[in-house]
Every structure is written in C-alpha cells, then in structure tokens.
Image (cartoon, rainbow over all chains, first blue to last red; front, side, top):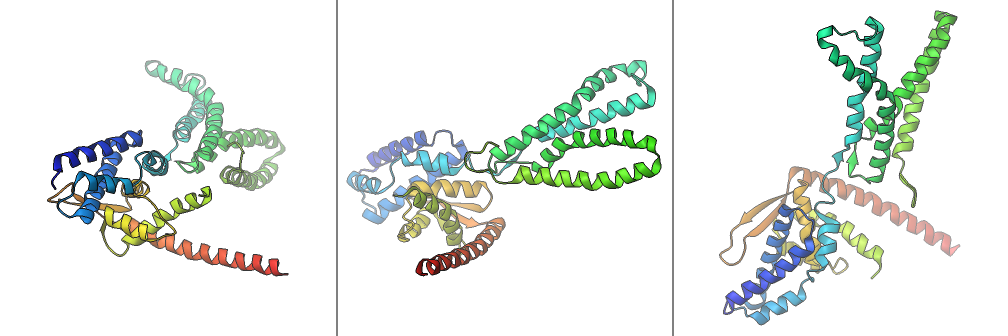
Length: 223
Length: 114
C-alpha cells in the first residue's frame, strides 16, 4: 500500500466515528464490532486494489459502506446490550425472602407468647416482629409490582411464577385461615367440607391470576 | 422504504446468519458479502456486525481469531451447540409459519374471488 499511513489514519477516524455512534454499547461488544468493521475495510480494500491501495481506493470503499451514523440505530437499537439474555426480576426474590417472616412471627407468638426468644437473643424478636407485621402487605404489593414490571419488560425480565405466587400467597392464606376460623366451631365435618371446597378454589384462583398476568399486552395497555 | 419491511428484514437477519453458518465457519466480511447477494435482504454491514456480536454474547456463536499479515485479525464465526439447536428450532418455526401464512393467503384469495 503506497499511502499506508494515511490509509491507517483515515480508517482510524472512520472507526472513531462508529465508536462514538455506538454510545452505550458495552465495551466488549464495541471492540468486537470495531474489529469486524476494520477487518471488513481491509478485505474490501484488498479486493478492490490488491496490495497497492491508495487513499482514493479507501474513500471509494468507505463510500460503499454504511455511514457511521447507521450504527446508532443498529448497534445500540438492534443490538448488543439491549437484547442480552433475560434476567430474573429482583422484586419477586425480595418478596420471597420476606414471606417467611409473617409465619415465623405467628408461629413464635403462638408457641411461647410475645417475645419467645431467651433474653440473650431477644433482639431477634425486634427484627422478626416488624418484618412479620409488614410481610403480608409487603409481599403482596411486591408481587403485584413484580407482575407489572415483568409484563412491561417485554421479555427482558423473568420470574413470573414467583411474582404470581408472591401476589396471591398471603391473600389465600389469610382468607383461608379466616374462613377456617368460621367453619371450625361447626365441627370437623364442616371443616373437612370447607377444605375440600377451598383447595380447588385456591388452585383455580392461582391459575386465573397466572393467566391474567401472562396474557400479552394490548396496544396502548398498561402493564 | 416501508417500516414494516425494515423490521421484517431485521427479524429475519438473525435467522439468515445462523443458517449461513450452519454450513461451516465464516468470517465477518464473507457473511456480509453473502447476505448482500440476497437482493431482498439488502442489509448493510452496520446491521450485521452488531448482530454477530450479540449472537456471540448470547452463546449461539463461537469466535476464532486468525491473525492476518495485513490489517486486523480475521474473526471466524461458527455455531455452538446451542446455536445449532437454535437454528433447528428457527427452521421448524419458519416452515410452520410459512405454511400457515400460505394457507391464510389462499383462503383470502378464495374469498376475494367469490
């Protein structure tokens, strides 16, 4: 190549423009794209002018290639960071971590009265108590928010079964417990009938919420 | 150009690239040349290279770097095991979709003639 240094500089400037257009694309992807484009230019140049390419040949090659500005839509838009593998949503995980505290609080309180831990470990109770009280509300709200976020993410977030479970868990547990408390004084038979009726109802509710949560969004509909 | 044609081309491009590579490894320039030869696709390299980067990231393609005496190294792309699985799935879906759309168009044509 007779104008080797000028050619290298001109290619460098072209690649810098593409790098600027790629913007937020992760550095690793940006490097890969730039290496491919640089190799592309050299291949095209070699095909056009063999070993003695001039600056004019390079200009002709670059003129046939896509303008750097087109990488702004293709690189970032089609591309790299935006369409990586979906990740698990954080909110349903937080909800799942919070959910047991309500039970721990109730079971501890039922077995030994308030603050069942020995004096040396009574601080545990002061952690469990507020988390336990907040748990039914927080888990339900977090589950509901998770469903909205996962739906709105259009596939970028996963974890819908856990989000649905978090949303319906405490409403089902509390409503079943309340109804069981009503049926329990009527005798064992009434309680058994209640359980036989409630289990399919709970399953049907879970299936209904899951279907509602996973149905595709209509145009203009909010998640 | 119609927006829907642009969107359709972009969607098909991943399918075409993976099918191209199902015959064996190819380097970037080679892939772009072969895609440019398909007139109806007419995609520039600014669309192809980001997709190659994404497919590599997603684990569908593996990259082999071969040093070149002149210019930067050539990056050869080949399908991974999950890439092969993906092509096979895409081809099955394509056949199914193609058949269904053809049937739909036949029905529409039939109704139009009535």
